[in-house]
Amino acid sequence: MITGVAGFIGFHVAKRLLASGLEVFGIDSMNGYYSTQIKQDRLELLKRFANFSFSSINICQRNDLESLFAANPFDLVIHLAAQAGVRYSLDAPHKYAESNLMGFVNVIEACRQQGVTRFLFASSSSVYGNQEGGVFSEDGFTDAPESLYAATKKANELIAHSYSKQFGMQTIGLRFFSVYGPWGRPDMAYFSFTKKILKGETIPVFNKGEMVRDFTYIDDIVAGVHQLIDRLDHLSSYRIYNLGNNHPVKIMDFIRALEAAIGQKAKIEYLPMQAGDVIFTCAAISAAQRDFGYNPKCSIETGLKYFVTWHLKYFKTEILLPNI
Ligand SMILES: NC(=O)c1ccc[n+]([C@@H]2O[C@H](COP(=O)([O-])OP(=O)(O)OC[C@H]3O[C@@H](n4cnc5c(N)ncnc54)[C@H](O)[C@@H]3O)[C@@H](O)[C@H]2O)c1
Image 1 (cartoon, protein in one colour):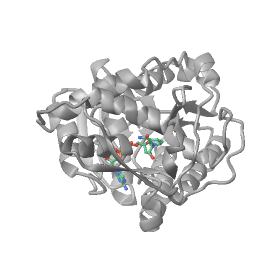
Image 2: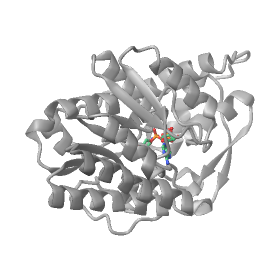
Image 3: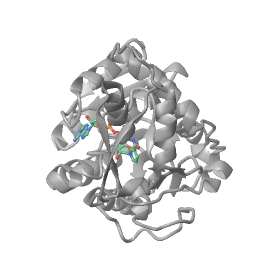
């Protein structure tokens, strides 16, 4: 069972598991945080698989969730539904409290009630807060979140830990690091930059471009989740793993790679640092490598080419005048 199945990561994880022959039940509220069209289109692709079922459920609606769990004996829950986005948590804090705190408890509690003992969930690199330089390892400091979003993700880890301790559930949290790729999230910078560069519009670059991110290509994440599922029987009852690329990229190098993939130069407006943002991220991935063979392979140059190719096709854009 996958929550947030019409979302970017949920869609890709579901597609991979369906293709491998597993039965997947997906739920999603199809909320309008970003284009519901792209969520519908992802769902249409998943519905082509005979082993896929879907129900439109909001995880904040406890009764709906409990009825669903009572009627379906799930073996494993992959909980990805959440209000994502760091910056939006300044504008709409209650959405984060509802989906990421109440919704999270509703899902993990429905698992407990129905005896679902295996629970994977999405955490985030944002739990590391603003630590400059150095590689973030899972046992490092995570007690100074910069945003409510990050605080809810840290809370998820603690709640999962308590369920693991009290009820013997296996709960595993995955700290994703800036995931990008085809069918990605329109609210993320690489997506909106691509749209703007193609239209000849100016892109906003924060903190004078002096930021570094460990961008991780979606197929590497999906492979990691699949490998993890295969190894669950060998893992302990509570674990947190980083799923990143371990190759941090400066934002300006990232923009250069995007320009090269599009074949157009970006017009840039430099703006101050945004509240809630962090300067640097880089995942230590040795735990995931050791425990389930996680091995990210895709470079930013290649990954952005795949993304731009998808973007042009999906939005049926023609590039008329390549200028670099
Ligand atoms: N994409 C990244 O770079 C990244 C990085 C770190 C963590 N994460 C986490 O990974 C998970 C998946 O992220 P994503 O990028 O696919 O985001 P996404 O927004 O594309 O997917 C989340 C999905 O959950 C659904 N959803 C939200 N609230 C819901 C609710 N109350 N009930 C039911 N469905 C609901 C949304 O409609 C959406 O389809 C999230 O938990 C996110 O916080 C993502």
